[in-house]
Picture 1 (tube, rainbow, N blue to C red):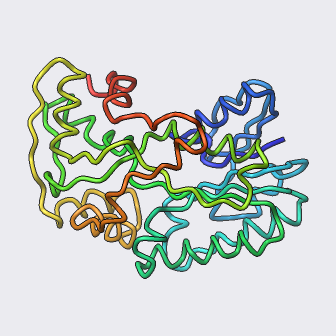
Picture 2: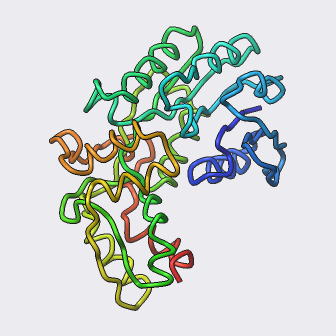
Length: 279
């Protein structure tokens, strides 16, 4: 049995489906009640209180660990989850980390994530670590404004990074959970090309078949919006990358292809699959 945290999200949902299709029993963990995956079960638990995860870990052979936003905040202690997994007899953990751990190791949230990576490595468990860059699904932040005003509002309109489709992250995670060849590996996950927010607006317009205007936010305006759904430290770290990406942050990684044997999906592919959210 494999435990998937964040199971109702953009990565967790396709991951639980992929594991179920592979014939695995899955325990899907989320903060809210949800439908259990085929052949599996659902457990409601808040990872900020690791004891709540104990029920889900009973009988588990592997764990996919995705931290909610508050577990990136200063003072959080997600290392407890790794200790509880080891104590429960879990043999393998796949951690969703961040590309920023390598590219900006001294950012507040990056230091904490690096420490968690070290805990995973030293846990005695088999492990793999995934370090994605920005997510294509972050475009869903614009869904309401596109629906109501045909506007994408974002900072740094002409600065791009190779954002990754969460479906690709899920497929790589499934491979790491199921295939021993990926143990002990750290994979950097990106999309196939650098794309700017302004270009993303153009792709959304093409998918919708109607105009979408781009409006550039100031950094302060963007942070105010992001801080409603994530710790301020994480918002600052994210905006640092979006405003001035380093050469490592605009590099297109070969790792999706290495694991899956195909090129990563483009933002246009993501937009076509998710266009209903913007109508």
